[in-house]
Length: 612
Image (cartoon, rainbow, N blue to C red; front, side, top):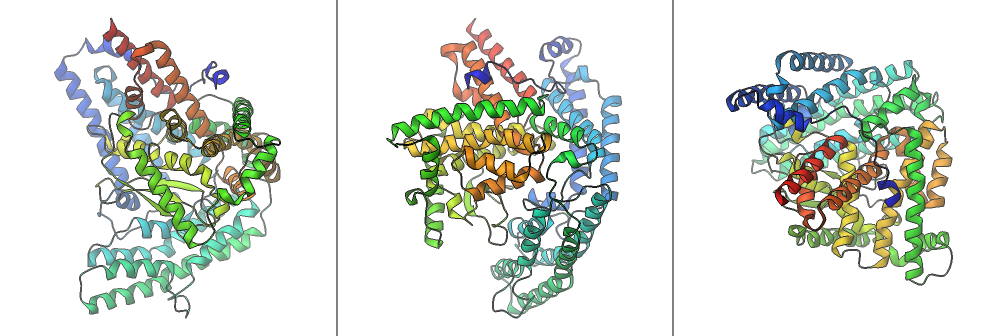
């Protein structure tokens, strides 16, 4: 780590706080003038968020708002144009109507973050077709059922009718998706061949069971609907009528929606090839460089990220080899990897009993960490967290683990999802690191606290900077070791295995998208350099392919947080307080990494001033 931290990550200077300059400018305005100008800016930012919310019924639902509860989002090119026009008009208003010099420090931060967001959206519009909206990681085929199951609550008959209304919108929405796929193909953006069978299978899974066939089992969506309706205290006739309407909607809208998508994907698959990197896109190199900047919020080039990855892989291998020697394993590190991959002691059984045991232990790990939070945090989230297995209809293609933030109104806890489709990909020795990353002290602490922030514009409560969010997640795997967790050396190996995985991501993502590595070369790099199962490697490389740049965020973000922590510790010595440092890092919500550094610098200066 020292080698990398001694070379501070070059940050993208798009947003800066100008803290010292701000203090000077504030002298020119009265408190009343600053308060008035700040209120004007914040009122506008709230108005903008409300306008965005009006355009996104599904976001309303995620936030616990039942305004357009019977609608799905509009996914048409016309909506893209509406959003572009909105961004341009809002940016112009900010430039013309806000006296930046008269803003409070908090309002200035919100102003600059919003301005950057609008500028990025406008600049990135030329790349709006440079992605794969339907793929094995995400897409309408799995996201819409998951949304209905996990987000659409039924608390009364009106909610049930809204559920049915949304089912009736599936056909329109899926038709828009197919048109969008055609638009991408027209400019040469065609999904890699390996994706098609996975998406088609996920789609076909939704059409299994009643009312789509004559089996005794209800389909995924019908089962969810009936389970929720049966929990209502309503008469049998009303329940029966609702069930009839839901069955009709599934047959009249959901079935043709999926059949339309399946038919198109089967046809397009015949025209697809195995060119995997973003280099194949129109202006592919420029697109990927831009994607890296957006993901990492740095100016690091693909070559620099690749080299950081290689250095980190080498460092972590040495630490893992020390654990190999500590546990008395005779053989090479590669032999140790093979032992960790195959020895049955490291895996729960691949049956329901084994899966239940995994979930129980994951809950125990999170509950144990909860009892230690006062040692490392000042602010703690109000929202609770629960652990769930990824639903069967999407578990085969979904990621290893992920987190869904709680509802803003407190009606739904945060959810740590563990994918138990293949138990050999979920070793026991990685359980600690995975629970800390996705749950506590990782994403749940960070994202729940973010949306519980007071007196900040709503867009900041739900903002996202991948390097910050995933950097914190990976950092949260690391610092529990300093608290005495990972007492089992195999579990500590698991922590390093998870970090190694993220270091390899730097190498493979840039390898595929900037150096024209093949899918097979990427898989081989993972299997040669990590202890993870081959299935893990395949899924990870396929994720790289369909999400260019995204996976570089974890390690770059973690390294920056560690760099800033070292900076604070070196400057403050014995007065350094890990609780205060963590408060600085998570108390403002998601931030670009350079803005985070500004806050840490201000914290250091403030502490030193107190000492003097």
